[in-house]
Image (tube, rainbow, N blue to C red):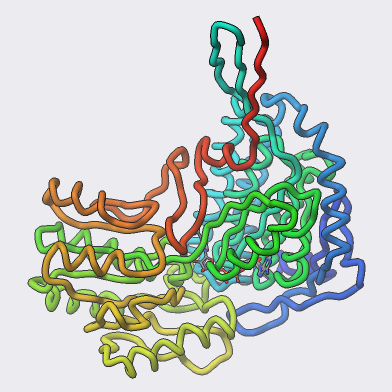
Length: 490
Ligand code: NAD
């Protein structure tokens, strides 16, 4: 229960009182400048720990460590890498509760979801561990004169830059395939949530990952992040975060011809037709925006509902939203905890005024209690139209915008006319329509009659302002590896 979790957390945090240092070449070190920044909890604004505030010098040290460790790591047989990555997964499972408690305290996410996210982190390692032995597999393409042998080789040291939402799970999703491919890594986690990235680095170290294979450098995006994207020894940047940061990174990496992979923002529609299984659609629509505080790239932040069923559907939705449990993230019954940070809370709540000014109805929520803590009520906007900012911009909180539509053409127009294209959700029992509509949707991932369920070999990523490139299965290896052809004359 809540009290037990609180006392467990107190024990875990006591071990972090010395602060959070970088981990470079297997050694825990402060930033070379000696500077730190404070990470605080969005639950009660309390100080958690001082964190290394790194700059270009620290990034350089980490890049050198990753470069030095690369040849031996790349040459290690895939079967040996597989064993090591499974060991990391075992230690994640052993420490899953500690990871979940830290994640809740650092980000405000509910324990209910974070306990699963920690285990998903272990799954990410197991999945790519099993792929490691075949990472270099290629093919032969003979001609009458040459025997062409194509294979994949790891790219070299890579940079991984991650955001603050579900940071542990996301970090493992990017780092596990890089390690399985034979790359070494410099990880720059988000400044709002540095706790679990440090746990991951420690776990990898304890599992016996050779020094320098995974290096952790904390700091701000503008200095540590920028230096990583500009470093000549870093061959690629895997980035998850906001679309505008993605374009900054593209510019920063231009001089060193950085290969980039971007998983960016979204304004994902859930489209509900009158012929759908409406009870299931309602469950999924609620889950996909109000779980994980709505701070989730694949959240269904726009509900497109057919006019003929809109009034009834909205009424049920209001009831559901008003019954969502907002509370302390360590309480296992809590569904929504505080948002990550005061600045993000201000951003999310600023849309309450935008909605009112634009003429939408605030059908549920629409306010935030006085602090301490970054709490906000789950909120529902109805009577919205496509041109409104609440229908176009990523709010990234527990806020759903409902836009009614007349027919299929109208729904498609609304679904596609946004800058983003990460995910789409479609509810209909008409198979022909499902095929036609999903084929015309501008999104990298579409779920039909389902909420977001991940199968790790499938491609994950977005189109338009939602990203460039795909993760998952061999798509991850295509990013972290070079394809090479050797032609033997016969
Ligand atoms: P952000 O872009 O502000 O920050 C992400 C990371 O980039 C942080 O580590 C930050 O320090 C770093 N950074 C910032 N400026 C940088 C620069 N100039 N150079 C290098 N690094 C820099 O994003 P955020 O607010 O932490 O995360 C929320 C965003 O992430 C949302 O838009 C969300 O949709 C997106 N997201 C996308 C996915 C996906 O898979 N598509 C998954 C999770 C989150």
